Image (cartoon, rainbow, N blue to C red; front, side, top):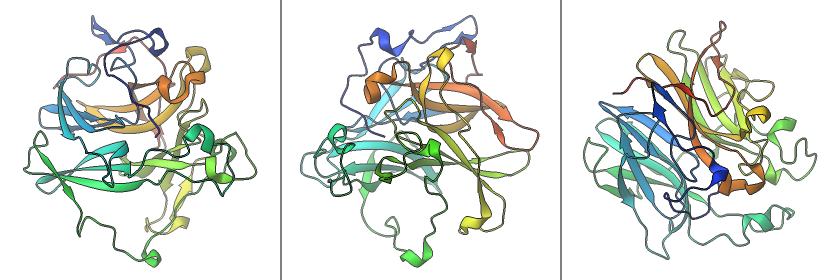
Amino acid sequence: MRLFPFSVCGVSAQYGALNSSINGTYTNPILNGVGADPWVIQDNDWYYLTYSLNTNITLWRSKTLTDWNNAESLVVLNPEEDLAYSYDLWAPELHKLDDRWYIIFTADSDPDNPPPETEMLCDWNCPAVNHRMFVLESQSADPWTKYTMKVSNPYNVSSPLSERAIISVPTQPWEKTPYGRSNNNRLSSNEAPQQLTNPYTSQQFIIYSAARSDNANYCLGQLELVGSDPMNAQDWRKHDGCVFYQNKPEQAYGVGHASFTTAGDENWIVYHGMRDPTNGWDARTIRAQQFDWNADGTPRFPRPGYGPYPTPPSL
């Protein structure tokens, strides 16, 4: 989820061709410039987008899913220094519960020390990023509004450890960095889980990211609920291998941290990826592609690429 400070404006060749929506087609990325950890949700006549900006939480809204360069923006949190959430604001998600909207994100009280480029070479005794989860609440039923920080119940996790369940850990070679690492699992990950429901069969999936987000091998894994109890790890089945992964002929690397939405009757995945994996976190851009379903009800994701692809229906 790591992202360095950047300007939304200013595009260099490493990010690929500028987004276009010409003659009913579009190309990836769908937002010019660096971007990572995208979250898109549709509500009424708008798509809403948020992603990691590192220093603040911003929402965008658009009538079109695949072109965000002219979208309206609204800064909902710009924290001062020396707060528990002043640094490294990552992976925001926008959720609607009852008549309020909530933005869930992670943040740190201090800048990274040591920086991740050094930390990745450390053993277990090396300090780690001290991230915690925070929640913003909207002041009305409209997501395009002011938000306030929630710091009291019921927004804090209050369940004892006995009521929490670990349903997946990085045990497979493709979930580790470097690939198949046999020791020091600090660079292995199962992160950014998203619920995905097949609307035709009601099958339940968790699509998550694996490996390391600045790495070409970063990909999406899949858990399927095959039993009746989501709190029982035995009721989940992990897919053997990535379900969405790098496409070397298309120079699409490090694809992951996805969210899911619809455009008309179409299903869409919004994710980040890299054209040049040697630039790591700074090379990530936000992309979108249509997906559908296999005969067995599992999601059938496309190979990641740049297009041109048919433009989805606008709202």
